[in-house]
Amino acid sequence: MIQDYLLYFSNNVYKDSLYIHLRRDYKIKDETRFFNDVEVLYRDGKAIVYMIHNISRYTKIWMDGYIYLPSKILIDVINSILINAGLETLAYKKNSGFVIGKIIAKTPYLTGFLYEIDLKDRIVHAYTDEEISVNKKVVVIEEGTSLDEKRYFLNYDLEGQKIDAYFISEKDLSISDLNKAIIIEQQADVGSDFFYLEEKR
Image (tube, rainbow, N blue to C red; front, side):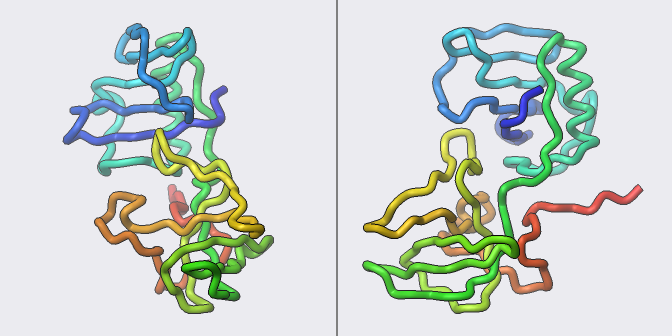
């Protein structure tokens, strides 16, 4: 089962095709094979992308963009298609990697600010030129979380300070061109998943 993947759907761009990016080290394909409605792109003999064409035959997707926390129902539909095509299936995602945190400390650092952020069960550190008030709730990602098929966050050292979180902006999520940290104004639990939706049946 594939654990690490990223879904992308845009009917405006790819016309009824769902992209499943399988590898973070983005490379240009060197081979393509078709398995029924699934087109598989390969690089060096390894699958890098599944493209499910005519996805509306199986399910309706109402959004454009990356689907960071797909529902179990959507994964079940995708896996039935992959099984019929004889391809490896996807594991359920337990979380998106986008976490709501609360700023508990702010320190001027270099040309910007160093922030301590409470994620309920741990404290992380992020750096930005933007000034954000203490006690504000923000959205961050930690090491290994992908923004898209080319970009993902890795911890780094900033002149002796470990930076192990990254502020998410509206621009990162293609919501707008605003390149400022997303501030959560409504009630939201610290440590909860930004993309979590409760399933009701």
